[in-house]
Image 1 (cartoon, rainbow, N blue to C red):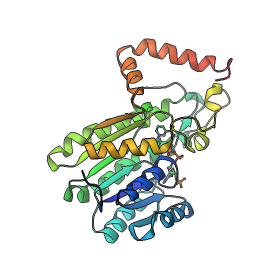
Image 2: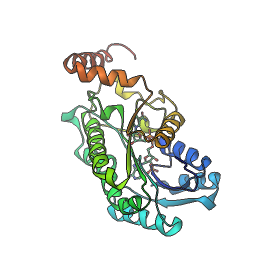
Image 3: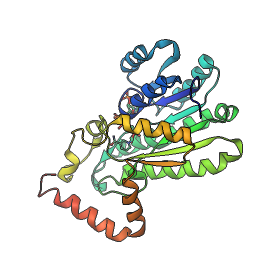
Image 4: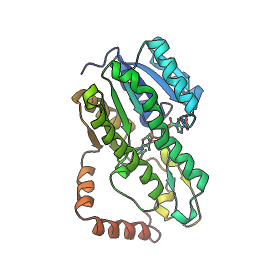
Length: 267
Ligand SMILES: NC(=O)c1ccc[n+]([C@@H]2O[C@H](COP(=O)([O-])OP(=O)(O)OC[C@H]3O[C@@H](n4cnc5c(N)ncnc54)[C@H](OP(=O)(O)O)[C@@H]3O)[C@@H](O)[C@H]2O)c1
C-alpha cells in the first residue's frame, strides 16, 4: 500500500510513539495532522517536518467538541482522511483500593472513549477512501497485569472494540490495525498516574527503559502497508501472551509473586 499523499490524523503526536509515527509518516510523504494538548511541541514538530504538509490542531482528546473540530479541520485543509491513529494515552499504577477515581475516569476518557468518539467522527471520511484505523493498544491490552488493572481494562476494551469494528467495516473496505507494544522508552512512565502509598517498588520506576518509540513506529508502518490486523512489538512478547492464554492461573501466580518480590529486591 502506497502512503505518499495520504492524509493521517495522529493523536498524542507531541511525544513518544505518536511523534515517532508523525516523523516516519512525513518521510513517506504522508500529510500529517498533529493532535495533542501541547501546542508548542506540536508547532516545533511541524516546523521540523515542513509546515506545508503538516497541520497542527491542539486537541484535548477528552473533549468531544475538540475531536469533532479535529476531523473538520483535517477535511477542510486536506480534503479527506485516509488514516486515523488513536495513540494518545495515559497510564495509572495503583492498588485498586487506592486508585484516585478522577484519575481512573480521566484515563478511560483518554485511552478509550476518545478513541471511540474520534473513530465515529472519522468513519464517514475513512469510508470514502477505504482508509485505516490504527489503535495503539498495548501488551497490557492482551494480558492482565497486577497494579495496572484499570489501565489494562482500558486497553482490553480498545483491543476488543477494534476487533469488532474490523468485522463491521470489512464490507466497506476500511481496515483496522491494533498495535500492542511492550515497554517503550517514552515519557509515559514519568507522567503515568501513581496513586496510593503501597505500590510495589517496580512501579515507582520512572526511568526510560524499553524499546525505542521509533521501533514501534516502523512496525506500525509496515503493518499498515501489509494490511495486518494486529501486531505485538517486540514480536517475542507474543509468546508471553500465548503462554498466558494457555496457562492463565500459573501466569497470574508468577506475575503476582514477581511484583511482590520487587519490594525486597531492586529490579
Ligand atoms: N510507553 C510504553 O511503554 C507503552 C507501552 C504500550 C502501549 N503504550 C501506549 O502507547 C500510546 C502512546 O504512549 P507513549 O509511550 O508515546 O506516551 P507519551 O510519551 O507519554 O505520549 C503520550 C501522548 O499522548 C498525549 N496525550 C495525553 N493525554 C492527552 C489528552 N488528554 N489529549 C490529547 N493528547 C493527550 C500526550 O500529549 P500532550 O501531553 O501534549 O497532550 C503525548 O503526546 C499510549 O496509548 C500508551 O498507552 C505505551
